[in-house]
Image (cartoon, rainbow, N blue to C red; front, side, top):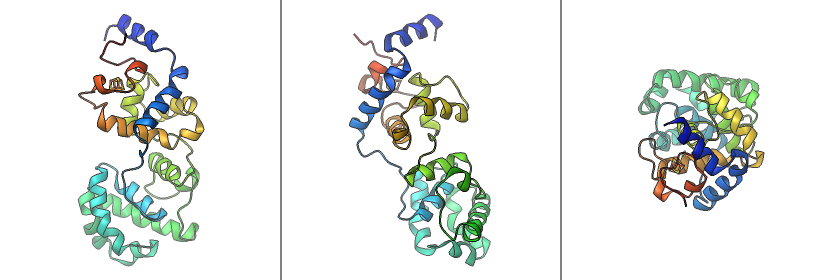
Amino acid sequence: MPRSYVHEARRRVGPKRARIRPIIERLRAEYPDAKIALHYRTDLELLVSVMLSAQTTDVNVNRVTERLFEKYKRPEDYLAVPQEELERDIYATGFFRQKTKSLRGTMRVLLEEFDGRVPRTIPELLRLPGVARKTANVVAAELGNPQGVVVDTHVRRLSQRLGLTKHEDPVKIERDLAKLVPRADWGRFPHLLIWHGRRICDARRPLCEECVLAGLCPSSRIEIV
Ligand code: SF4
């Protein structure tokens, strides 16, 4: 895209600080039910689902966990079966050997250090084997204690298109978003972007003509008068 066009587009929509609230409000009105797509009933099921969701789709994880959670209800249950059995039970989520190792390591630490409960802070969650920052952020936010803004592929793409960040690195994008998005919205904001990304702002074919953010977006392909 020519530089002058980018400049003009940014000038047209105004500074990001002035746009962030209307962006959140419009997305909230559009997707009042926006929430995590993973199915879970307990804190432990949430943690396991998020760990299994690496490199696969939420739909796939839900298909696997529907049966998994009937069999494994407590941290002890993941350690009571042979490793190969757990590998078979989560096979369809991909990377099953690594995920099994992480799950079993995590269950051990939960039992040894957290009384079998899922902790709520990022530093505690990061003590669990196989739990990286993104997983910790998702879990903490879902448990009502958002301590950052979760950046996945949709959040990254939409933040860039909306001119909220110029970065590629998820950690730097998270930093930009955390400065911009009111703290009370840290948990909800990624879900709003993810829902919008799945329905309207597709990676290859964004439907700008149907987008409620068109007037606030420097990447909009339609003329706003
Ligand atoms: S206007 Fe287009 S590029 Fe911008 S957020 Fe909407 S769909 Fe995406």
